[in-house]
Image (tube, rainbow, N blue to C red; front, side):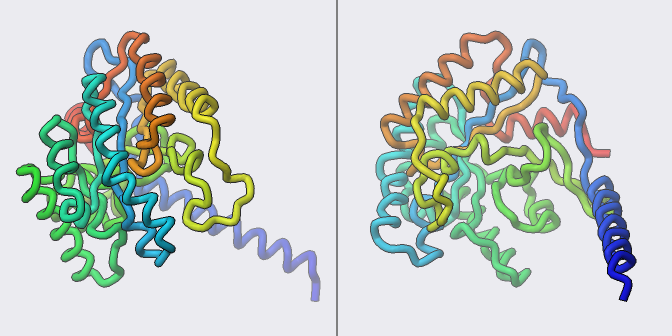
Amino acid sequence: MDTSTDIANALDHDIAALKAKAADFDARHQLIEKVTWPQGVRIAVNFTADFDAMLLRRLFNEPPSQLAKGEFGGRVGIWRLIELFDSHKIKATIFTPGRICELYPRAVKAASESGHEIADHMWEHQVPKDPELERDHLRKAKDAIEKLTGKRPMGTRSWHTRELLLEEGFVYNSHDTLDALPHYVSGPDGSKPLLNLPFHYAIDDAMFFSFAWLNTENQAQRMMDPDHVEEIWWAAFLQQYQQGGYLNICMHPFVSGRALRIAMLDRLINRMKELPGVWFPTCEQVARHVLATHPAR
């Protein structure tokens, strides 16, 4: 057995697979080299909140102490975020599971009445593998939001199938992290493109502040100093600001809703507002603009 030949053959096979994957990526994704924002706008900043409350931890059958973290988000954290954004006249996007509309209806309705976008975040923070059950979950979530707010959600942060989202009238997803700018994801033949508004885990509060996130054993994951995180997020903002780009900040009410982190967000927003050309739209506003000015091919 010629080991060197076997290794060479294996490497050739791996390279061929990578080339095929790259070609498939190019076929499925329509990237936008530079987004043209409205006149005078240099950067669009989406403040987004995943209003999970205790649902995700409940799925993992975690102990009451962990569930209580999520409940804090529904009872206290979400109200603090609404108050913060209202004080800055910023319209945020709150990705809300349908079940949360039943558990915390006052908070969801108050956010909507303040002008914040209530978007979909699945029914119970999971997507069933069975296609019919998946459709049922998506429709229940969509109906729950519309019944409570009077507005049909146009966007989602989920791993629902693209085809189903399009069939149900959604105009964007904010789930993929594969690019820094809004882009389209389509079928292998370029069909049925859906706009994606990307975020990144470096701009996700849970990665910095949620100790033992989903029972991780990563010893490096500790609750970080909010001042340090502020500088990380400020650096991310400046990099995109200089390029005329886009920033999608992902928060969770049970994480960022703690008082010391609300104070950090307040400082960060004030710093952003000192620069000219900073736009704080909802995700739907960004989606409508990109769809109109950079339509899919």
